[in-house]
Image 1 (cartoon, rainbow, N blue to C red):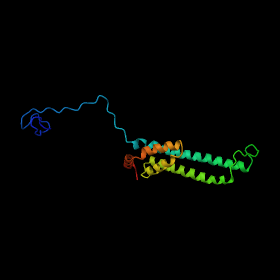
Image 2 (cartoon, one colour; image 1 turned 180 degrees about the vertical axis):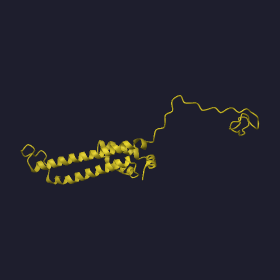
Image 3 (cartoon, rainbow, N blue to C red; image 1 turned 90 degrees about the horizontal axis):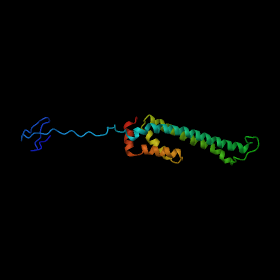
Length: 176
């Protein structure tokens, strides 16, 4: 504290200035707020990390189901092209050229790889692994092309994990 009259430093708890003898006013406490104080919100990454990890696992399951449906449609189309249809007559409803049969392994590979990577990113985020943030950002950029679910998940992931402040937050809670 400082004396208001002469500017001399005063010891805390003194009632008079030792130099000029002026009475020292008691410090005024800060005014209390009229509304209740709420605890500060946790950082963005900490608030959204569990939801993001679960959504990536769900997206991996979605990719498996979508891949199985695509493989089934491709198998049915090649089956109906070479054989009789479901009801006994020759069906050309799903006529595909023979080179389309080569798409089956490609669809299986792409669906399986993206599903496995989505599961790995989801579990990595849930267990707070240091590498999971980078993997989730890369997958989010690729998922932007999978409208509408992949686009929504990609935007949400980039909003949570991409900013520089998010990197510092994630690094502070990540396990090696």
